[in-house]
Length: 204
Image (cartoon, rainbow, N blue to C red; front, side, top):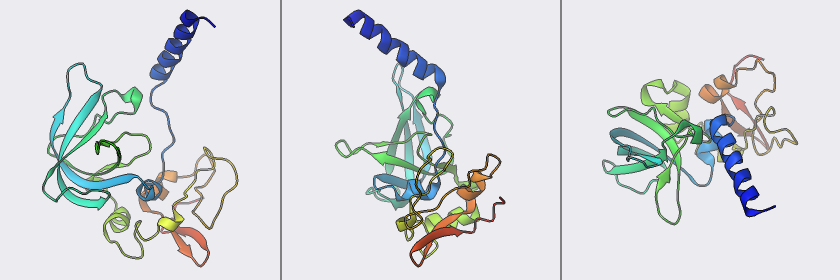
């Protein structure tokens, strides 16, 4: 294929991707929290910076609590970056003055922290359920940090294949299953050699 033909193909693929928008299945917050490179924190947005012509939004947070992977001191300003467009899974809805508990990833080379709507969780602090508060903040036996040996929480609708109950839990496969309920109140916890759901009375 000629260079011209290759370039046209690449452009067409890119346009197709952009027009299709951000598409990914929602992951359970325990799986996200326990990911090796996850950064999880609580902060209040003090500034939202959208550079003209830039492709990244910079959220300036006052750090209120570090939950995982944050080395900055409490009360300091921490910058979290995201894509400026929803088609690239950018986070545009966080508002100045509001408090959020959110996850992201830190670039090992630059130290910069990035987040997006795909593969992360972002909760307005007033929307966090009692169960999520327990799992995120307690540090006890019913917390995410103490149950990362059961982090492989899979959705069979999107991840078909062999499931290992010694490493995690499986979300229901029924189309009408309330998987959002599992994300808000379910904990994947080990009992003996098997991981199973706790507090997940979410119907069939």
